[in-house]
Image (cartoon, rainbow, N blue to C red; front, side, top):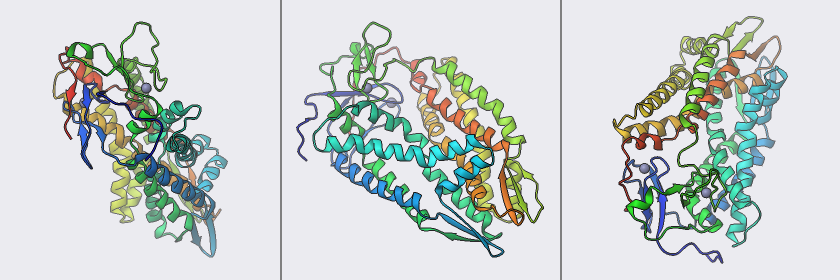
Length: 425
Ligand SMILES: [Zn+2]
Ligand SMILES: [Zn+2]
């Protein structure tokens, strides 16, 4: 591929995102990947034609996105009456039921953020593909990385599956074109994610500087940009900015421990109403009573839907509790300057950071149920206040995990003897 913007020549260094150790970057063989020599985190991969492939996949995803939002998603048939829903129906219904925080959450996670991410990716990659630069490349690309955990289409799809199983013995459900487009959209977006090499994009946005002849002594005076991985020399002055992407530079995330503690404690408090208040009320022919998360699981078991009951129990009850416990454990271990198994603790952190969003499954299931089961006296499902508290728990624990700086785990044992490391493909 031709491009007037050349990748940098000469030695390049990068710091591990998870533990902060500085590595020399070496060219990789075909299909190769480099991981951190200390904590095992993935550093970079060989991804040929990354920008071309990601751009094509993202354009395809945009077309699928339009289809997924324009056609019927699911149709619910009961007693000769039918309700057809699109992706937006659940959002509108939640809003009309007075649950605007949930409506905003479902709208953001399944429609707004995925669309913004697609458009932002195209905005960055299209000009770079033709060797041009447009205004705001760096902040827009930084924003796509921030948006990444908040685009939850695959979690929504799991919610669709749970809702489908739950309704299947009550009524007839028909799958619409939009649902198939939505599944294709998820697969194409995952493929685009896999094809994208952020290092390549950052190279084209701006060169990596300050990389020659580093010694062990230097690595203590280096700062790694958490957004674009540019390694910079530590300068005096309080608000240093990354010369490449403009993000504020910190040696560690500021006030990481205090912030994470505050968010974890808030999540613990919200966890109580999330489990005591009803998350939804199912009414069928005038009968029905409010369900909490736990009683909802019991209903599923009583109906013999074991796999779905286990899935909901795991996603809605086990995962949030384990996540809070794991974060408290990491916080205490860092505060006690523990040297115990830093590598395992880093892996634990990575798991906590990546599984959290899957707890949203129950919220998405509710949004699908309230949209479909809306037949007045025959059958209707209404959301309950517990759902808002539960969504709050999931969001707070997600932000708590993002606030925690895993490099703190390694600080206890580090008296910065480690110079730049060489990684092998
Ligand atoms: Zn590492
Ligand atoms: Zn940067």
